[in-house]
Length: 270
Image (cartoon, rainbow, N blue to C red; front, top):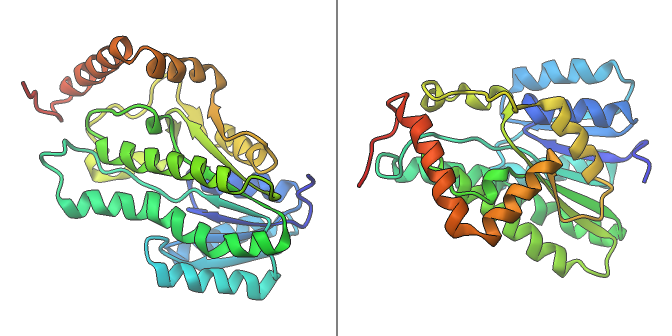
């Protein structure tokens, strides 16, 4: 499918994977709806998009708020009359053991990472079904398949996204509306700017660029696959974890605990 003049909605559009995805879609001539919480960042991103000669719409919206998502959705359909690709990218993590995180911190991650995706999907899905065309791209993480110490809440939100996407994909069988999840490993973005993440190691030598993941997002918009893992070689690790959990889980758990304990950011629990 050509993306020329297709309408693409991207949440979390002003930084990291979201911003890089907007650029990649714009290069292909798509019209972009920029969705983010900060007006100043939206204005900066609009200026970037203006260099591609495409149509844009900037919507200040916190996807964890249903009423704001509804307003953003209405603005999108009022301007363009359709939606071809929805990229649910907005998300964040708060680092810390479950015993120390507040309920509000855990809820906040689930509200943005998971329910924000649900709210956007619920708003635009009826229009896609009416059009008999469209694709939903959900940006998750390899953390959807691995429960990791210190980011249990984040892992849970991405696991929920993956499970929701798979179930929805089955429901949409026989329609021309697709669902694809993009699950990258660690990415070099401002994801680690949250104060809770300052003390932990930020990037490994294998960390990806936002541009690399953005290209996978664009590919996902026309893909028939349920999940695209970036890089693809990591799919072997996911397979091994699900096939031999009694071997892989202790290895992963111990490796992450040792790495984290060196920073003094996670207590040892017997």
